[in-house]
Image (cartoon, rainbow, N blue to C red; front, side):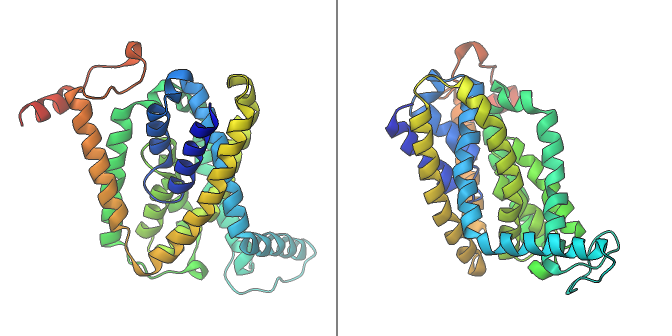
Length: 314
């Protein structure tokens, strides 16, 4: 990986990790355009992407430092108080029948919401690292599918509930939606914001909870791959990878700032339209044979017959 390739990947990761248009999909596009996908194996590409996410993880930690501090202090304080037989300073109904402060309750919701992707991610680790998840047919299909689901969530979601109203339903809805992020093209932020909207959250609340829920998911994925990446990637990759990670963090911070302010007064319509256009264009190019599903000719499957028939009939 050259330093120019590293900067490009860092910018792409930072821009698309939190904007609901799929960071993995755009990183796959970027590795193809820069020639990295031909120089690296599927496992090496996956490792590179996971490590780049550590940069955006730092961006989340810095942006939400006050929230994270308040949640952590309240979580420890309230549970120590309960263990001693006392009563925490309650400002909301907690979980498991115990009364906890709103901040401590939010800590439990983040833990519960992180369980689905942790379990499924570990079970399917080998599959996720393989070439199947780099297939452009899959990426294009998920770009379109999540766009349609996000559109449906915009239409039927009540969008009345703020951070103080979050409960177990939100943790489960957003947590299981986050599992979709294991499929490239789905978008972790797109899937989780969609889950939040279906649960009745306001757009900004859905985005904020999505970002907080990203901390365990991105942190575990990046740290798990970091050690393996050092052994998998070619010699001399450490410095460019570090640069890419720093760039992704800086751009990621700006992306968080932008999206939270944007969703206060706007719908996700522009992101839905972008996903539909990119997904449909990619499906067209694949069906016409203009681009190949995978970079390796030996791995490229034949185009789905239905897609070929559809585009050849035009």
